[in-house]
Structure formats: structure tokens, C-alpha cells
Image (cartoon, rainbow, N blue to C red; front, top):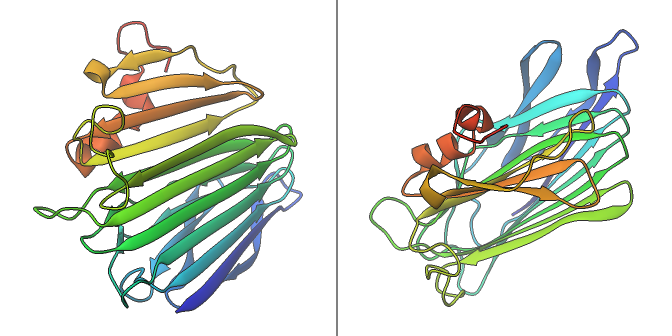
Length: 251
């Protein structure tokens, strides 16, 4: 199955944001809900199970100068096996203009046994843009080994590379569970914060080594990464406010 969706947000000239384009195709449907503090919120709704091996899905997001939008999903995305030898793919491309803000906060991606899935994100930030981008990967459903999944994230800020990050797990990624990668943890994720109004925070390791905070060069950005025994703990690790009062944390 091939499907695409597109979300375009523009400043309304009154200090708020209007969504000028919200469209999608099954299983990639977009639904707007009442926002908070005047920021529109859009949910990605899975109109069918999956993604299944062989699916090719694409979501394009554009946030115009001075606009702001939040994007969530209603449930975890479970990558499932499909026809033999096929790979499922989900590509998200986002362009965030000067003075604009994008919050990308979906639920987890679950790599179910037997799947072969590729998740790609390409984000282009103008100077002065802000971003909150969360990725979470759960290696298999409860009690099962994971399928094969790869997550690639590319972020540019003001025309320069800001982040290049890749992770592969499952049978096609030898050593993924070893100490050099996840150390046996079945859940992992990251949270990228780009905010021109505040400096990047200094590096720090928190939560007994399960969480790391790293400032990025060439941009006002901080990357949080975490591993966890389950999805609930992972979400807590990637909720930055939860670390605000830990010793030595500015977070």
C-alpha cells in the first residue's frame, strides 16, 4: 500500500496559527483537535493495521514563519510482517521556517516479530526555528523477539547539518542488543530540542546511566537519548521536565 499525507500551518496574522492544508490517505489520516494555548494539534490516525511489509508511507509537514503546530498519534505504530522479502517504509519530511515551532510527539514504534521496517525523518530548520522531536522504538511486542527495524534521522539548521542519527535493531542488525548499542534494553528513544531562545544544555548522564543529555554543535540544540526496560519508563526518561530537579541538572 502506498499513501501520503500533508500538513501545512501558517501564521494567521493575529498571533495564532491556522492549518491551511490537512489531508491524508488510508492508513495515514490526519485529524485536527482543539489545541492548547492557541497552538493547533493534529493527530495521525492509523486507518488500517501496520505498517505492513510492502507499505510505503509519506508525511510532509510545513510550518510557515511565525506559526506553531503540535503533531501526535492516537496509538503506537506496530510494524508487522507482510509479503516475503518486502520492507515497510515510513518517511516524514518537515520544513520549519524562521520563528516557527514544530512539536513532533507521536506514540512509539513497535518492531513486531518478523517485520522489516525503515523509518526516515528529514527535518529542515530555518535560523530561528524551534523543534521538539521525539522518537521511541520498542523492540518487539511483549514476550516476543523483535523484527528488523532501522530508524534514520537527518536534521539541518540554517542550511548546516545539525544531527545525523541511525539505529538498527533485530535479526538484520548483529550486535544491536550488546553493550555497544542497547545493552539488552528493549526500549530506546531520543528527544531533540532546538530552541534559539535558550542555550544548549551541557552534557550529562542521568537516571543511573539510562539517560544522556548532549549539546549539539552548529545550532541551539540539545539531544536527549535513553534506554529503558519498557515503554512507560522510556516515556518518563524522555520527559525532560522529569529531570529538572535531579542533582546538577538544568533540564
